[in-house]
Length: 112
Image (tube, rainbow, N blue to C red; front, top):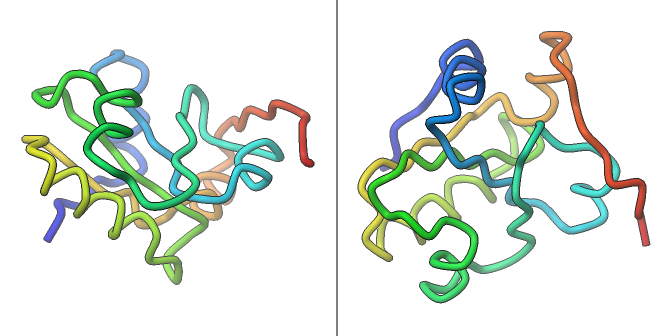
């Protein structure tokens, strides 16, 4: 089971630059809006993909998806743990919790 991170702790880690943030949602969802600096992981995460998106297995990695009812983040976090990542956390509030807290989102504008 992954460690849970709060919105406040995630925001702090992001501002300090001590975390890699992954969004476990389809690419169109990520293009429409995502947490600042988040890297999209739209499907199953292989060890090769993990090394590409989060090259340092000792760095804290936080995974989120749409919100509390979404389980994509826990599946991606489990894949990272199996791949040997040492500090994997899940932000269960996801995009909906981030938005509800009034925090900024980014968009690539591409929604195809």
